[in-house]
Image (tube, rainbow, N blue to C red; front, side):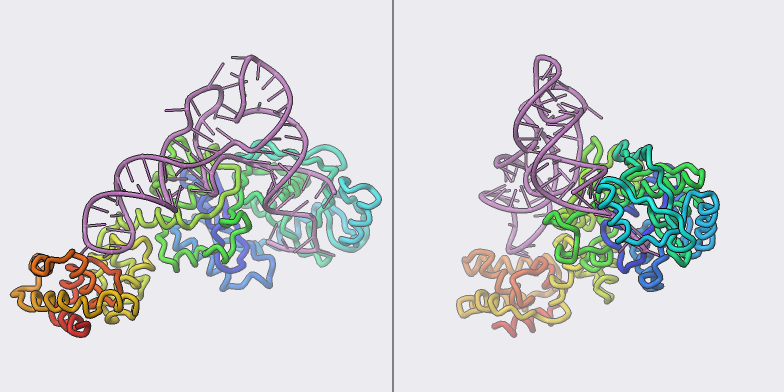
Length: 439
RNA sequence: GCCCCCAUGGUGUAGCGGUUAGCACGCCAGGUUUUCAUCCUGGUAGCAGCGGUUCGAUUCCGCUUGGGGGUACCA
């Protein structure tokens, strides 16, 4: 099996594109086949090196490795032109100056369900000659059989008047030349498939197998966009999601088997992937579920691994001790700093928390806590905990009446890692200093 | 307009003629917990509609409705 992922470099890799790439990758790895990466860069204005780099960057981050490429479709232009010439010579294509308006006019005369058929001229764009009868049948691994009546299709333009090849020709030829056995892409290309199959037939070649994936939608059922929180792989990365979690989630968006499990490792995914289990209905991207999956993966990580990832995400070192006490409280890498930043930055500014927990009514507890901590002979977790629990008892109040004021004194807010752990990590001097600042 | 694809709770899915329609996320309610988060328990909610086929349809067929894609000398 040889599959390919062929994005056009328009910027960051869209989540839908990432899912297409993932399915291609899974299919290839499952069958021990070859995954080819090809950049559809024939549109020279959009195809900048930067845009291409962004696609590769996203694939690398997702750890979807390719076996061949990245190939540049633009590099194949000579071959595309040769094919066009051959098609012209064989009478399977013709030149015509007919434009969109002419096609419209033709339809007004012949009926809307009658495809445009032009008459050959010496110049103009090259159109493929579509048979007036018969049908093009596409056997799709996911959708079964789809039949297009040839009579409905307008003769498609396969090359501009200047001879430069167009998408539907280039794709068909490139897939053929690369020996692609299975074309896995979004359903938005299903209609194009008819044209591509016709190109292949005109060349006297056989089409590959096809598998058209349903499209991804946003929470409102509309096209996925920035409004929905994230639309690209890069955005997912920047929001602190783990690549393995994204792979797991994306795989589940449009694929599911009898086991119906939610947490499936990538290796297990490779083992189980099967086109028969790919869904036909469009799926909505639900970030809440991604978060949950991400949390599960994140909590499975070792302290060392998680620390390394948090440090890379935050962009600073020495976070190990804090990660150790806060790791289980975060669902994404992005949540670490808001939760633990106070350790380095000092108490954050949360007026409401101060008002509630650092008022006159809390002073007795706070002072008692400070005194108990100050008298400790060692600054270890058990001692710290014993000291504070002792204060709770001696004051005869609820644990919260002591712990929360201390927490706010240290962190500035009501949310933090465990209070004993935080105290220990901060150290005696810093802890007492912050306590003093709050009294 | 024309062509094509799709349709199980709010979301992702299991189901492949006979099920109390299962699981997960979310949400709600409890519990654990020093806050938050996690975790545990329970609950909530679904086969788009109408016709067929059949002893029997969520499941097969058709239509309708509703989504989506295509219809470029873009990819």
